[in-house]
Image (cartoon, rainbow over the protein chains, first blue to last red):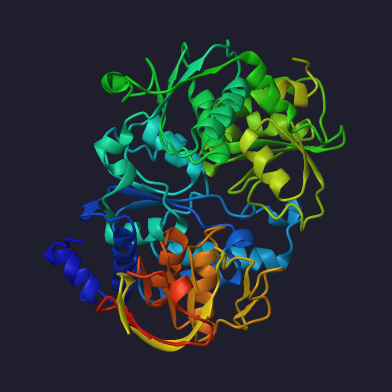
Length: 394
Length: 131
């Protein structure tokens, strides 16, 4: 792989041991993917934050990097942690877990990473521009950044995104190259989608069909940010989709029209969408209702508050980012949800918090991503639209 | 006998071969404090990969596996080198984090060529192994 003189110096340790290690990681991956060279990246979003996933081994790695003086050269934000960094006791998280988790956050902070602790950096002002090269981890944010924002990233892991943040580089391969952004399958949606829940179901279904290919989706009349967020999360969960195009909607769809010939067409009908929702119907009426995978936008928090008007719901947990929480607090939305019996937590979500260790068994959610991962962790799960979960019918 | 291959992470190591015919997950597959394979039903269950040249087709499972490789390195329980048929992100990341020599795409299939216990020299810097 070709390296510039500066990159050679970074690799040889002239800018310190931490930079050399980060560079050697990127070069190794460049070799694996036969990248010709590295490319400069503008921002990073780093996963590998929850102590539940990292454990002692991951914590050790991060602390060693921080100790070696690793520091980010570009803007870098952080994925959710395993708990609300302040209200963890109230959540039922153990002090041992909290200690490990706080050390993880501290190590990232020492390296200059913004402790945003959210899977939706694009909702709190970290929005790469179209065509820019970035190094993002977190599969739902990767799908959103590539598809909706038109930025360019592969599905990075925690260590590779961190290495890119430290060096400002990433190996040039995969979705960073124009030719790999072309569609490889056409999805004809022959159903009328109305809610965010429908978009989640559609994403889950397309992910299964498309696997790791690039779907070109037709037949959608429009979509809100929240609907695209749900679609991005689901499509990256059931398959490995990192990039999709929606005709008439996403920024690169128009220039892809000349690459559609000879592609296979797969129709999606209403019964297909119903069928995916029916797969997660385990949990009963006593399940804890979890909303906020990916993290809630302000509009979604408002919707929860409105559905809770003049009623109470004792088993409702809502997850969002600190940025959105602050706005919601000022508008009285957090208070409205908490007065109805719900709880609004920041920095974490149902997928990365240690729910099993906290004694949870059953969860009801409006997120296909959460339903998928929670059931693979052995919890009993029900997926349904928010209105139904909160007892307001469909 | 010298066999050429692709260098992914450079370095030099010698050790006894230990071979898994099946793809391997470090997350849940091995006890990082001892280097002993713990995956239930794995043909190498109970065997240690510490200090050996570990040969398997490719990694699988959670990306957390890369941190496990790193932790084994810190504990002194990591393999001396890893040889894959065709490596991927998790193993490459873990080996780079820990500085463990990693090669793949050897000119001959190491799963057929080597037996457990064979002494192997891995010269990833120069892009070959020697038996």
